[in-house]
Length: 487
Ligand SMILES: *[C@@H]1O[C@H](CO)[C@@H](O)[C@H](O)[C@H]1NC(C)=O
Ligand SMILES: *[C@@H]1O[C@H](CO)[C@@H](O)[C@H](O)[C@H]1NC(C)=O
Ligand SMILES: *[C@@H]1O[C@H](CO)[C@@H](O)[C@H](O)[C@H]1NC(C)=O
Ligand SMILES: *[C@@H]1O[C@H](CO)[C@@H](O)[C@H](O)[C@H]1NC(C)=O
Ligand SMILES: *[C@@H]1O[C@H](CO)[C@@H](O)[C@H](O)[C@H]1NC(C)=O
Ligand SMILES: *[C@@H]1O[C@H](CO)[C@@H](O)[C@H](O)[C@H]1NC(C)=O
Ligand SMILES: *[C@@H]1O[C@H](CO)[C@@H](O)[C@H](O)[C@H]1NC(C)=O
Ligand SMILES: *[C@@H]1O[C@H](CO)[C@@H](O)[C@H](O)[C@H]1NC(C)=O
Image (cartoon, rainbow, N blue to C red; front, side, top):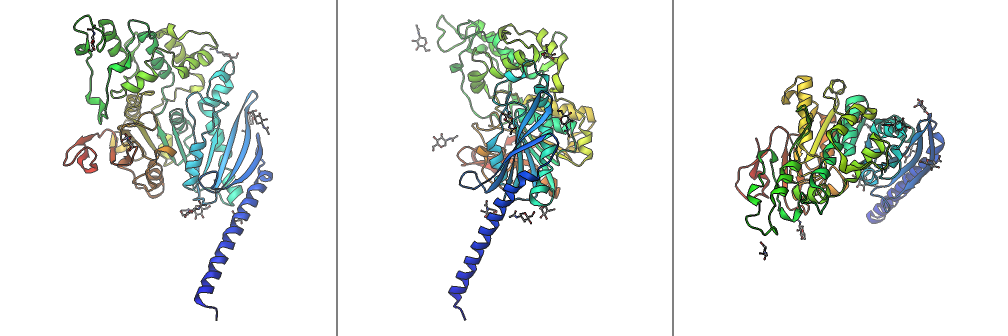
């Protein structure tokens, strides 16, 4: 009879051997995947087993080029984790880019998703490749993401021997808009969509962010307001705020810590909604609470790069177009063009609803690049277009404002909701917005709140489902989660 010790040692040894064999199997399967991929327009050129020393979990990484037109194509990667959960996930992009978002692939594969990411039709973060190439613009508007899904969803069956059970999307900013493109136009692509701070209404947005420079002027202009004149904190409900700069106007000749009358006219203009000459809303106001960040990035007297490139390389095919000349006439040109329907502002999402799909939309309430007011505007548009009240939308579309989150992450508040790799404070459904979406899709348990932790994870806040907003009711200080109530 072997002793208890030696039999358990043998068991441990056998298990270790099994794990090693399993890993070898997995690596072998990975390298043989390359020959199995035979899909029209797809050139797969690498399949590598990558271990958790390099990425967060052991996985098989496949690299492909996919032709999307005679003059464009995408670069696509598919990451297959060894700890697969049967779930497929597609990631999005950012700005005018251009880059596979590796942190998103790493984060979502670490949670067991088979994940794909594409370069959105061109490499790099600049919009130069849009110039004179409408096909590259079409890839950026919708075709890269959709192609990545069409190709990507064929791969788990090849690699794991069975197709995925469910299909998800995660993206923010341009990635948030891409998520909405799919909800509006390809309702079959995903069972669950997590779309953050969407750059939607994307012919309105470049006018809004382009409109600041002609108002502020450059740093030397007497209309320019240096941002040292503001201070800040977290606003739970920016809707309650209006801002009147009049008390800040200089009382005497000394203009050191105060506004001149000319500067005081700049302030409400950059904070206000924009209307066209017919009184139609172009873009809602910057939500109060993001002034310091917006001052540094958008009201800094410099052209805003992403926007300038959009006007130059997409709308005008003119590399010398001058951003300080922007007027409402340019807005109408862009609106008319709406290249490849990049606008992404259709309020009828009934086709997505009919598939049983769920969309979880969030937006930081101190977002300095894309106003969260625009997300509320879209929510209202869906309500009006579909003739539904919030409780009816709740079945398939929920929107959460995240106080203290800036653009897609970071910020002074409880922004760590699990939407991006550097904003994760937990992986259970009540700590992580992606897992909450999975629970909604797979178990029918919909999130009532989205919980997040602050940068140092010293406190949590339950962010409310719009149109509810948080109210402080006490007892305890602001860090006490139970001191806040949605109403
Ligand atoms: C490798 O592929 C075979 C055949 O498709 C499959 O049965 C096996 O489970 C795979 N092994 C691993 C570790 O993925
Ligand atoms: C797979 O998941 C299990 C349980 O969630 C975890 O303990 C293990 O470390 C994971 N393995 C890898 C290789 O990521
Ligand atoms: C993939 O596409 C890139 C351009 O995006 C090109 O440089 C590269 O040579 C292509 N690779 C293969 C194997 O076709
Ligand atoms: C392959 O690419 C061409 C454009 O180059 C396109 O017309 C065709 O529809 C694509 N095929 C598939 C299956 O996507
Ligand atoms: C999902 O897919 C995996 C792998 O293909 C399978 O083993 C599992 O049973 C499925 N799970 C559910 C809940 O359908
Ligand atoms: C930009 O150039 C392309 C290719 O020459 C052309 O198809 C497109 O219509 C042009 N766009 C504008 C706004 O001139
Ligand atoms: C102007 O005001 C600042 C601060 O309010 C003060 O430090 C400075 O001495 C004043 N300058 C003059 C010329 O009065
Ligand atoms: C987080 O902690 C660091 C060091 O303890 C501190 O300097 C920082 O101010 C804290 N950040 C927040 C947002 O509380």
